[in-house]
Length: 219
Image (tube, rainbow, N blue to C red; front, side, top):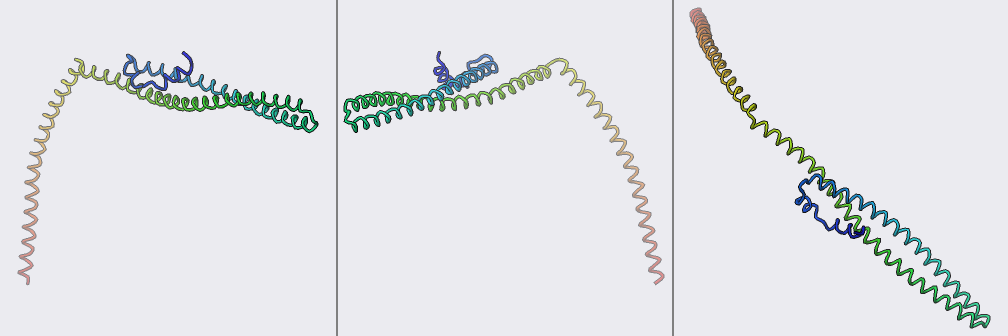
């Protein structure tokens, strides 16, 4: 499979669909990311070569155009010297060079189209790679969280945990009984204290009343 076919397959692939089919999603997405990274390196390397080739062809086209102008100048010179035969030969050379220029410019146009396509596909592949990396982190976290939940559930439904919880309930009932007894004692003590407080309050009122009577008599 060529690098361009592989690039197209990766870009057109649906990562979610791949993960749905995978027995081990974490392993699958790791393999997909590795494939994307390797392809991206190859495509960028290939793009660099295309760019270099385009620069070479551009320089060649410029050189050929200069040569064509040079032969045109030579043809003008030959005509000025009444050498029509040399002028025709010069123009023939110019025509041959212009043909080469046309071929070179056609190649340059094709290279430009290839670079535009590669640039678009590289952006798409980079986007897919970023998406895959983001999903990788999520999948790893979910895998760990699921493993932790599974361990916790196993512990929750084990005999040891159930036995321990039964003991907790037993001791909680015992503590409830002890607290009830303490509250009862406290209520009894509080009732006795309230009676003494009521006596003290009544005595204070009696003294205040006696003081008022004495005050009225003095008037």
